[in-house]
Image (cartoon, rainbow, N blue to C red; front, side):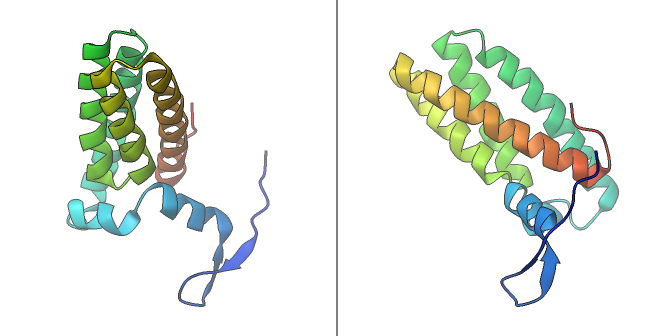
Length: 134
């Protein structure tokens, strides 16, 4: 499938590809570059680790046990902050809080939000690395 790409004006007035701007919001590229010291190989490795870790933590979260959920959410929170995946970090933080309070409704809502944000981040990472998304 070939996606058409719309052009939009960026914050600095320059025209940019709409998909690239959406990707930048999903993963804070400037933050990622600072965290990896501009090393492209390190960036690639860190992003690949995040994708694997995200899948593992989401699997643990699906266990339904509040203690396991809180620990997995905490792990994902730190990883997401490290790469600048702010939506994932926010959702993981909400899930961690909800699991500590053992509020089933909030755990369900936060889990759904975290899964959606993680899938979005994983897709953006796949696009950035030139890999197919799963």
